[in-house]
Image (cartoon, rainbow, N blue to C red; front, side, top):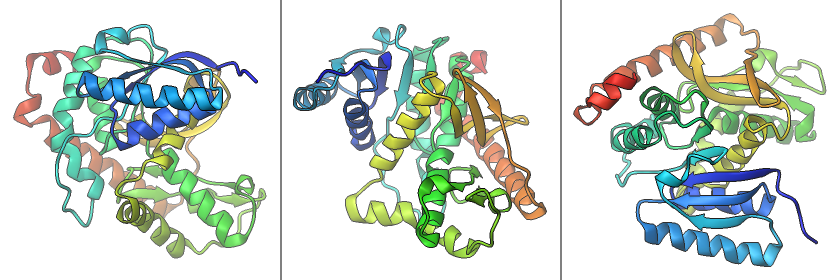
Length: 311
């Protein structure tokens, strides 16, 4: 039985582990009619396109894959950036921050190549709060969102549902701030079946802190969770459905994860009321990300005329 795709064309930059999971998810969901794949080499892009095309044949998905170049992306409704530089991560804390210096030059180059792109950009590359800001400032693109806090929030709600033996849909709650060690659990505004109840907060925080590391230790990298977060964000940003996504965007002069309420693809910030401790944590996350971003922009690789002009 044939299916009709909700969106015409999406582009994917990056054919690594996360890029492969994103492509697979978009195919099985039948989300778009065309997926244009670009990667470090044309060979990688062509190989992933062929692999997803085999999946399309087996699942009757409406999605058709095409290897492409950055110059082919102007007419795409959205671009998903899932590139990762080759580096060895030896950190035990602030693990996602380890990729800042390695990934920033590639993100900067992509931003320059896609300068003034008018569609929606979803950045998956870590540290995602810094990379999404870098891409937005260098490219001049107006609709740039960082994936991360929406995955943290989904994990948080699922952990509560498992603990209380209730359906996931019965839980509302957010994780905001940094997609990393400075993530803020908005426990004071969390509800279960519409009611605020006592939560095992430290247990939940511990679960969130180790979940990604546990997945990476077992299979090498988180991939399916981020891919699901991308699909959910695409549904909201491209007006397939309305709802709330926790995404990294400009806020108060900085750039960090906050809840956005989407209606017909247009986002409006909808931060919950934070208690005093949560507000201090949110301010600390903002300060941490601002400081890290200033250090990032001082890297010699990013001190180019193009980036100076666009920022």
